[in-house]
Image 1: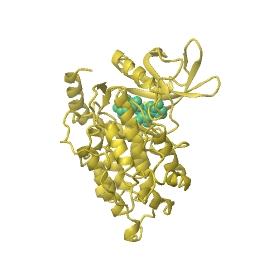
Image 2: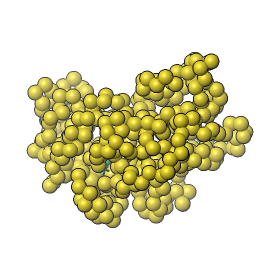
Image 3: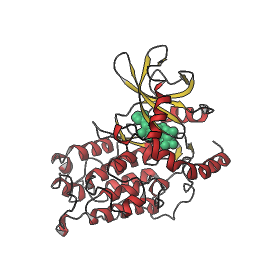
Image 4: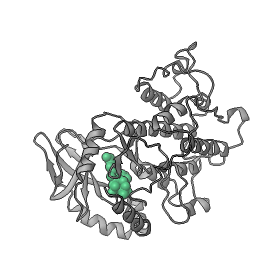
Length: 376
Ligand SMILES: Nc1ncnc2c1ncn2[C@@H]1O[C@H](COP(=O)(O)OP(=O)(O)OP(=O)(O)O)[C@@H](O)[C@H]1O
Ligand SMILES: [Mg+2]
């Protein structure tokens, strides 16, 4: 994708998209507006359409997303397995570079990246439209988590609309660490996706896995700290899309500032996503070789166990030897969602962060400060 195209698309999209997105983004009944119903009518013509490959066929069942590039459908094969079919908008073509990027990412077998759907890797036309077929994530995108909890824009936040307490600190930390694993895996494919905003981050309801989608804006670059997705969101009526904005759902002000400090550290301290991942994974629970496995033996909770399992799978020699007191362990005692007006907590319960073990203070990296290709 050329930079010229990229910049002009950003300029156009930043003015044109907010209203459009606000009207048609969701397919949930309670959020369907008049405009979206009109749009749905057009989209429904593709429902029931069958996409075939030599080995399997997929039937389009339902629109699950709508974006700048096209509409995304959930499709089902003969055995009941789902896949995501993205039908590109009129005039768009499947970009060879995007396909190559997806193939490179798919070959990593990362659990945090939606791969090209097996058997459909080379299918680029569906129902007469250019398309891409990827693995389906049964859940919601992270922007929807905000939407479902009354935040779409900074105006909503300023007017006190956010349902604080909707997101617990430990879940947010899990989302963050898993996302860092997603950035690290993107990095492994020697790609940089500055468009990894909240609408491109899926949260699988059943497994609580964070899975990245939409690599249309990815480009080849080995050096890509996850700076852009952690920037400050713009104010007013612009849709929120930065990881920072998830903090508005935290009930506790201490948690909120700890999380924002953590986001700042990611932007300032790390040259690569991999460094950020390991630095943050152990910021609060340094590995202690004398107490191997103590942390794991506590079976703290599903979310954190899975999060750590994902880290374990990276094969790092430091993982599996985590012990000591840190926010993760404190979080075990606060398993329930934080109530809307949480009482002040005992200071010892407030998360504190020591400096990341592997952090190297590097000057802020500007290469990744490109705007996303498709701001909302
Ligand atoms: N693999 C998938 N599984 C489940 N839902 C998906 C999948 N891919 C996309 N979606 C849903 O469809 C939405 C739009 O998809 P995608 O981001 O690929 O399109 P886009 O046109 O690039 O949109 P945008 O410009 O908003 O990034 C996503 O935000 C998500 O809600
Ligand atoms: Mg997208």
